[in-house]
Image (cartoon, rainbow, N blue to C red; front, side):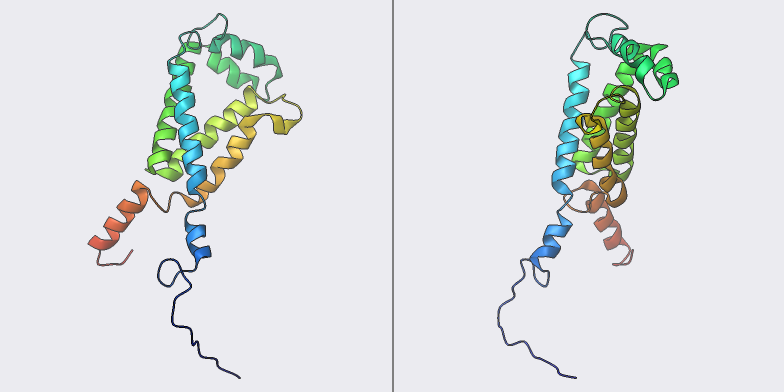
Amino acid sequence: MTHSMRTDTHSPYLDGDRDWRDTATRYALLPLRVFLGVTFIYAGLDKLTDSAFMKGSGSGSVGDLMRTVRDSSAIPALVDLALKNPGAFGYAIAFGELAVGIATLIGLLTRLAALGGALISLSLWLTVSWTTEPYYYGNDLIYLMAWLPLVLAGATVLSLDAALRSRRRQRSGGYR
């Protein structure tokens, strides 16, 4: 068996003994987190500031949208539930998107927020964009898939989750 000895005197790594690929891996989900966070904040604010959207009927209302997609949705019962009180459903979606977006952007309870985002996207895919053809033109399915890495991995860098985890680790003497 042969042993080799390194003779170079400088570290090829960006942050101490970490390789640049390790750094890139740590930050890989950050652009996705920022994109989804900003997008869901924007979507929630857009709904909250659109007076027509929150109405039960009329052009551009959540009520008309739900009545339009009811017969073509994968789960008509879900649409029927929304149609019982379209305004409340509109506010629930808007505030849900806003909460998910803010939590994702700041990285607080990121896995839970991502699960919320995935559930919102799933419900919209099964109702509003179910009949979109070809399926990849419908953005709700793509958003659902985009949330899944954050559900699995959370926010490991530049997040309140990471700061809280670090603080807990310091308090426990370095042990998890």
